[in-house]
Length: 139
Image 1 (cartoon, rainbow, N blue to C red):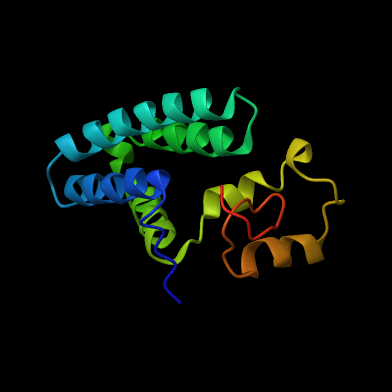
Image 2 (cartoon, rainbow, N blue to C red):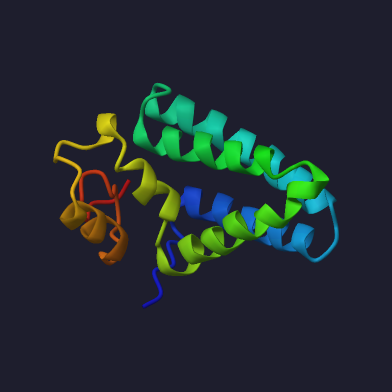
C-alpha cells in the first residue's frame, strides 16, 4: 500500500534526499555530499519546529545524519545502500526503520522491552503521525 504524503514538507525533504542518495550510489559522489547537507538543513528545521533536541522527529533526523556521516569514508560508502533503501521505503510506503528502532530506546517507550513489542514495532503497518505514540494523527 502506497503512503505518499505529498502535502507534508518533511516528505519532500525525504524524496529529495532519496534521489540524492540514489545519485551517489550510481557513481556521482556529490549526491552523498548534498544528501548530508540537506539532512543538516532538515535537522535544523525540525529542531526549530519541535522546540528542542529531544523531540522524537529530531532524534530520527539526528541519527539519520549520523548514519550518513559514518558512511562518508570511501571504504564504507557501500553502507549508503541502507539509508537509500530505507528512505525510499519511507517516501513510498511510510515505513521508517530508523523511527522504529529509535522507538525502542528506553526514553522513547513506556512498555517493557519484549519479543511482543519487537514484533509489533517492526511488523505493524505504517501509521501517519508518530510510531512512538502509535497514533494516526498527522505530525
